[in-house]
Length: 185
Image (cartoon, rainbow, N blue to C red; front, side, top):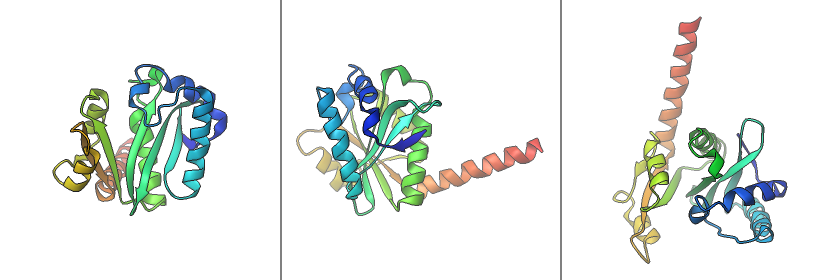
C-alpha cells in the first residue's frame, strides 16, 4: 500500500494530481511534468536529509494512486500532506494508507506528533480527519501552531495525531483482531 517515492511513478502521479478536484489541495502546485519530476527528485533528497518523509500510495496491484508526506519535520513532529487521484476517492484507500504511514512514523521513525493543516473550505479533508479516531482538533490546544498556520488569514483548522492516541488505537485494533481470531477458532 505504501512505497518509497520513485521518479518512475512521476508520470502517473502527475496525471492524477492535475485533476481539478485534486490540484487545488496539493502542496506543490506544478504545471508541467518536468516540474513534477524536479519536485519529486527534490523530495527524495529532502528525505535523505531528514527534512520530510514521503511515500507513494499504491493500490492492490502496486500502481501509484497518490502520495502521503510528512513535511517540515522538526522536533519529532511534522505536517501531513496527502492526496489521492480522483478515480480513487471514496474507494477506501485513505484510511489504510494513513494508518500504514502512521505505523511507520511512530513505531519505526521516532515521530511523536503529526499535524494536519486543513483548509476550512476543504470539506472532504476535514470530514476525513474527523473520522480518524486518533486525531484531535488542536486549534485551542496548540495555539502557537494554529496562529502560525493562519498568519496571513484565518483559513485553516489544525488537527493533531499524537503518538500516544495512535498507539492506543493500534493496540485496540490488535486486541479486536485477536478476539475475532479466538472466536473463529
